[in-house]
Length: 289
Image 1 (cartoon, rainbow, N blue to C red):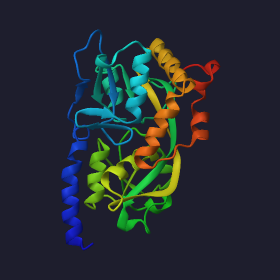
Image 2: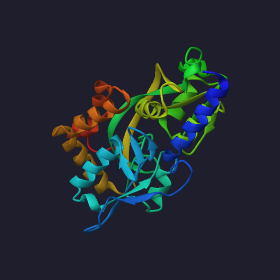
Image 3: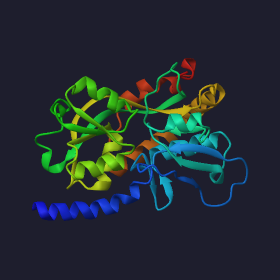
Image 4: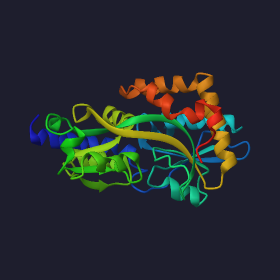
């Protein structure tokens, strides 16, 4: 593909990817499922620009994060029409919880028991972090070590951003509020790579097109996906853990993982998940607080 044709194709692609960008552009999105609430409403923060994990597409929230959030809300007694989704990610979830704008957040952010921020239940998934590059750079950039001296896009507050410093101390970090902005910056040669959890990257690559971007085989660190609740909400955290425990027990978690794998080709490391999810699968360990 010539550079001119590639540029035209990328501009068209970016127009199409505009459907992903509302959360990353700072717009507040709040969508109640179709129909009128028939009781109290629970506000849940989920990503809106992460195909396969949390994605707002055709005014419908979908993805693995949303599947888990739906299950937990149902376990807590909320019907479909009582769930209100609010755009959130690792950069915004803590503030939204502190402000009371949401009651729970299902986003990829570090699970840090005992800190001054939110409480965490779960985690409900664990994965390695990965690197996404332009397809025409796949032979020269992609391993974590190759990012030294390169400009790398991240979303602040993620495990991937924190782990990057351990594997590529010379990388220049560019923070963006959402992965849609990172993908746009990658396609327009403003950055050399995007780092995130592997299921996030695989979903982004599937939606963007494998002729444009490539997720490298090499990985680094571990990203845990926990449910954040407001500081002091101990009872809610315990209830969420109970819900996640039941989701694993009745097979719904495995079904949701299969759907996740089917979308973008991501393959969950079930051994890693089992190890990181012991607080859910082993009741004796209790909630992470």
